Image: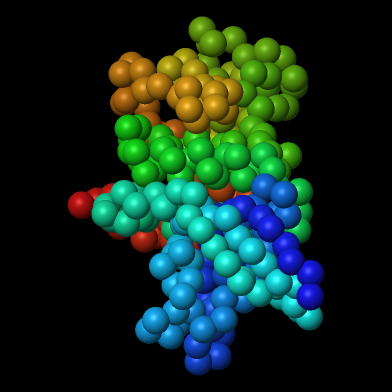
Length: 251
């Protein structure tokens, strides 16, 4: 039986039979994989403490007929602070569910892993507003998946946006619109220069260098609504974890 070594973040766990669990793990080298953790639900399971949600672990896997089996694990990062805050926990569940829904198994996912890893670090530290981290993740995940929104040229006529004139954003078309192509369609929202700058900043910057400019604070709610609409359109539905996140952020 072949032995496989990999590293990854646990994004989902479901029960299997009376004692086992199926884990969904996002890895850099093997993409999104599903593996079986035998006996994990038993009280004294040897690996139970290492196989909690959102842990970043080293894994030893044994090749199985349908799914590989976890034979060993050691924690690289536990992201322990996430579980101490409902806000952090809500965002972590949302990030994990987005990955589970949008990333195919064994799809090349090294850049998605790097993004997810950096976002979990930000959630754990929470130096930035939760809504800002959420929008950062959504925009960059869409970009990696080939759905990066157009933020420089009108999505209809391809002309550079005049930031001194009237312009807006269509989440259905996936980009900015100049004044000539703005409509009263409910899929279009008007933007100001500050809001457009924040969108560009979120897409352009790696998470580790994303700094909160106080001039953007008032723009976060609108950007959050915009990225919510973008994700709903991409997924064709709203995720349960986003409903949970919105509820806990009210407290």
